[in-house]
Structure formats: C-alpha cells, structure tokens
Amino acid sequence: MELLAPAGTPEKLRFAYLYGADAAYFGLGGLSLRDRAGNFDDGDPATLATSLRVAKGSKRLYCAVNRYFQNDELRAFEERLDQVAELPIDAFIVSDLGIVPLLRARMPNCELHLSTQANCTNQEAARMYHDMGFSRIVAARELSLRELSQIKSAVPDLELEAFVHGAMCLAYSGRCFISKWMAGRSGNTGDCAHSCRWEYALHTGDMYLQERERPDEYYPVIEDDGHTMILSSRDLCLIDHLAAFRDAGVDSLKIEGRMKSVYYTAVVTRAYRKAIDAVMDTTAPDPAPFRDALFEVSRREYSTGFYFGNEAVQHPTETSYREEYRFLGVLEANTTEAVDSPVPPLSFTAKNVCNIDDEIEALGPDTAKLPLISPVFLDEDGKEVDVIKPSRSYSILGPCDLSPGMVLRRRIYEKERLKT
Image 1 (cartoon, rainbow, N blue to C red):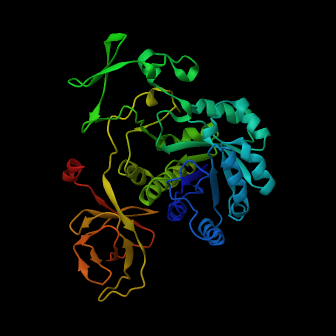
Image 2 (image 1 turned 90 degrees about the vertical axis):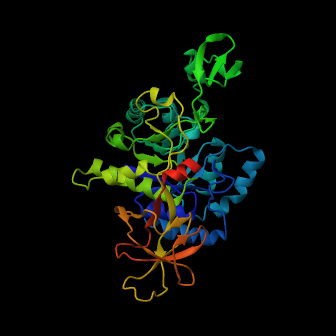
C-alpha cells in the first residue's frame, strides 16, 4: 500500500519523503482547498520545478486542484497551465470536472485522481469516473471498509485512496449529524428533520440546550474552559487497522494535514510507515514506539470515522487540542566549527521557547525518541545560552547520535496547560 503524506510547504514536502512517504500531495495557491497552507507559489516557476524534482527523486508527487471553479477562476487556471505543466507532477487531484478537458489538452499523459470533495460513494459512480479516465478515486469519507471493498471488486483496475489519519469536518461532504442526534432522522439519507432551524434555549446553570417543542429533552453542552466543542468532530486514526485496509483492496493510505507543522508531518508519516511495513512484512521492526508518538502530537480525540460504522463519528470531541510536546525545530548541518567539541554542531531555528533544564528529545526517521541530557545550545555569536527564544537561530552540541533531519521537541508542563 502506498503511504501518501501532506506537504503544505516545500519544507514539509522534504520531511514527508524523509520520514517514509511513498508519495506526497501539495497545492498551488488559488487552486486547492488549502490556500492558507503555504503552498508552492513563491519564486520563479523554473526554480520551483527544479527543487521539486530534487525533493521527490523517484517518489511520487500529486497536485491538489480540488476546488470548484467559477468562470473567471477557470480562465485564470487555464492561463497558468503552461507553468503548471513544467512541474514534476505525477497526478492531479480533481473535484471539478470542468478542468479535466483543460488538463487533458495540456498534459495528456498525467494521471487524474478524483478528490474526496467529489463525494464518490458507490461502485457505479466509481466505474463512471474510471471510464472517464480517472486512474484513482479518493473515496468519500462516509464509506465503510466493506463498501470500499465492494468498489474495488466491482472496478478492480481503479485505484482506491482512503484517509486514515487527521482532522475530520463535522459537515464534510455535506453531511450533518444534528438531525440524527436529536431526532433520529439522518439528513444524509434524505430524512432531515431540519434540526438546525429549530429554536433553542441555553440553560447556562446546568449547561444544556432545550428545544422549544421538546421541553423534556435536554442536550448537554460540554465545555472546556468556558467554550463548547459541539461543532468540532474527532480526529481520524486508523493505525491499528491497516491490515483491514489491505484486505479491502485499498491502494493508498492518506494522511490529512497540509496546514499542520513539520513536526506533525514527520511524526505521523513515520508512524504509518513503520505500521505499513509491519503489516506487509512480519519480520519488520516493531512499530509500537513510533505509533505511541501519535498520541503525543497536537490532536483531538481519535476515532475510526465511518470505516466500522457510524457510531464513532456521531459525537463531537469533548476537549480542545491535546498536546504533550512543543515543537522546537529541525536540525540542519552546520559548517560552524565549535571549540572543544568532537561532534560537529547542528543548527536549528527555534519555533518555541525552551529552557535548558526542560525535558528535550530528538526524533528521527528511525529513532523513536532520543532524550537530550544537558545539551549545549549556542546562539549566533557562539555563546552558550540557557533559554531558547522563538524565531532565532541556534547550534546544538552533541550527543553523537544527532543528525541532520531530526526534529527537536520539549515536554509541556502542567503549569503551561493551566495557563493556556
């Protein structure tokens, strides 16, 4: 199975590949559904094309063009096609069928992948898209594993891609659970009770909602620090079920998160890399230490989505983001010579504040965690410092197990949780 990782920026692309992705997906500004992800539009197009070729090597790269275009936007997209055609793109992820003729005319040999935004939910729709020239569908998130298996059996030459990790939207693909939750009638199957139109009273003392026509029914509003999470869905995490995806015929396992940090990209990609390897080869190393890190990155409560029934996704998250560690930076090679140090120093740009006495760890593609005991940090003038401040550059001396590409993090203390 292919492991497909998110790349919101060129740096995240590099780390997606470094930490085990077989393929990565990115967006171009104004063309995808993540315009705030950073994207890849800065600078000269020829320079971008070269950097992408170097980054991807023999791996695969997919471009998300998954928004729906209005007339003026469609013309603007057509004007950009010559530049887009120069990029080393293996496939376009498409929602709007209106751009398919434009892509085909300019890049006839490039693969087309149907975005999950197109909401392909059955085998006949999948067969139609395959007949239209799509080599892969990114399955609608509403599908169960059983339904994915049925689509694969019905259209075996069509590749299936499925999300296995990351954020879920409560109303993704037009779905809404308020009617099902309150009236037992699902708006996703044509039986909406229009619960969002009802009139409600908020009883602040006991924190519950009461609907005008149902005075004896109470809907609790769960709060965290004075704010409810009633509209926030739980995150997806299927790392313990990858064998079931293999058996269902899924070709590509997709991680959500183009808006998230390099730290998230590295930790999550590496966890699924190790887990896939273990599923495909029983002699592969134990993935458990890498899996454990999924519960240490910033996240909401996890669920299994729709894959094993709807119950797991019909309740919102009850807490805000959970976070065990803060991202400190990425280690890079440093040519500066350090006095009295047998180990070449490594540099990084700090992302968060850190005290030298904090619990600091380094993570690598094959290093689950490496505690740093009494590390030595130097500022840009080569002076030893006790406090690391965001957006400044530092060097770190030792231990010898550190290497470029590793990620630094520090543990969050309880007093910080209370403050935030």
